[in-house]
View 1 (tube, rainbow, N blue to C red):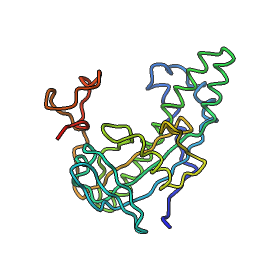
View 2: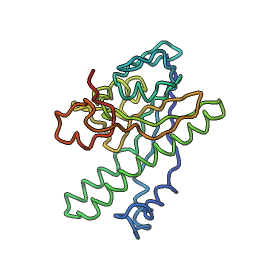
View 3: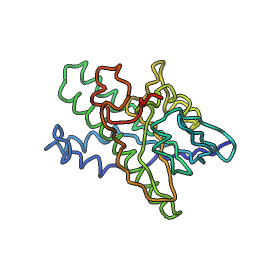
View 4: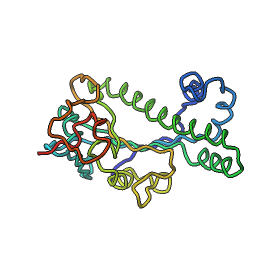
Length: 231
């Protein structure tokens, strides 16, 4: 059985409080954010995997216990082309802050509801960003360099793979997925990080417009990835 790493206490209090200086909607609300922090319950699940194979249209990950995950994404296959390992991650700050936000909305306390939701949304991003940096430092000591972090739904990586990731990470009732492949609690993120023996420029790949890419969706003109490249 694969050993999934689980961390129930990962301190992001300092970073969350600093949101008051970084997010325009939260400027000058330091005390409110400090009070809201009690509703944030960070939890992280992660699993280190070997990259067994990289193809044009995806990659295959494998654990020491031979569990496999096939990621079907041309974009991620390209971004991970020089990687030898990957880490699957699922993070959440729990449901408390979302429940309180909904309660405030139902009571007509709309501003507080919006502020709670804003703090929650940015806090889960703070959580995974800080944990990514933690892993990057750990793996740097092993001679491994981080590439960008990607989540299902980015580019051509289907949201439907969320369930497979959660099953592999054994998140059980802590993080689940609904029939629309959306995570529950809402303030949760799944992601993959690639690791290479060589440093990589971590700018997200951009492409020139009108380069035989899919143009069937109205907002394609804003797309900067290779995700929908046709053969």
